[in-house]
Amino acid sequence: MRKKRIIGLLFLLFLIFATIWIVRYRGSASLRTAEGAIFGTTYHIKYEATENLDSAILAELNKVDASLSVFNQQSTISKINSGQTQHVDAKLYDVLSMAKTISDATQGAFDVTVMPLVNAWGFGFKQGIFPTDQQVDSIRQFVGFHRISLTKDSILVKTDQRTMIDCGAIAKGYGVDCVSRILREHGVMNYMIEIGGEVITKGKNPEGHPWQIGISQPIDANPNTNSKIQTVLSLENAAMATSGNYRNFYERNGRKYAHTIDPRTGRPVQHSLLSATVLAPNCATADAYATAFMVLGMEKAKEVLSKHKELHVYFIYADNNGIMNTYTNIPSNLFK
Image (cartoon, rainbow, N blue to C red):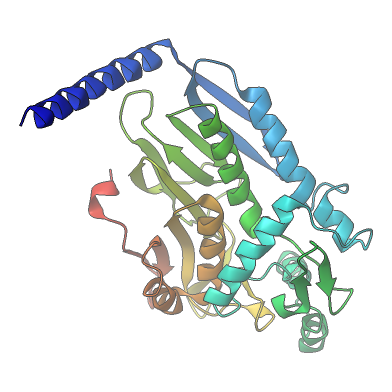
């Protein structure tokens, strides 16, 4: 009995000292903001720390950029695409490994080799002149995850040298995860990291509440205007990514369709899912699944979700009358 009392007293003392430490930490820490451009997009980071970590954040972002950015001609991925090297660095190896796992889980809907098809159709959407079936089938000859493999020695092997790799659909999320790791290593307990719309949160916002993260509506609008917010989620210790065709979809027979290319067919998807937001254990996973779900469409995405309970989604889609509707399996307590 006496032993239990001693243990209880020690536990109580631990809670008291832990509370005092947290209060003192929050009292001495300052809310800091880091912003800039990376990966062909922008980043916005808010964190509560006793020291300025902007240089450490930027250093980590530059490491990711030097590995994964197709906008950086000296990056590892750019050198692989141009044939200058076959060697894959640690970050690219991690990303390609995750990408392969998610590609398998989505029956090939997520594919880092789809870039030539996206480029071909992207030009068509802009110019109104679409690639012919013959052109699409020609490009498909060197598109597909099965055309690349990684060796244990970190060598990327291609079955066709024309195959190109673009990790843009997972790189932003991975960059968010990398910065999150840096902040945790420095003892930061409250932060929000956003890169190109992909987000991770930890702890509380400056007001002591969960971070408020909005999901935009996929609406027809001037690109120079701000998008409308569809809903707001209250998130702490969560990773979120959205894939959609905001201000970038077309109408066919009165229905709206996204400008999303299915890597398995080489052609635009023919379903009505306009936006896919995913909550996942990490931001890279959320990023990749959001892209895959835009390819699969809502019904096929639900089949994947039934096998992956760790994923939560918020889908915006157009019904048969062209009216926007939503589907979600996100717990109701996370909505503001």
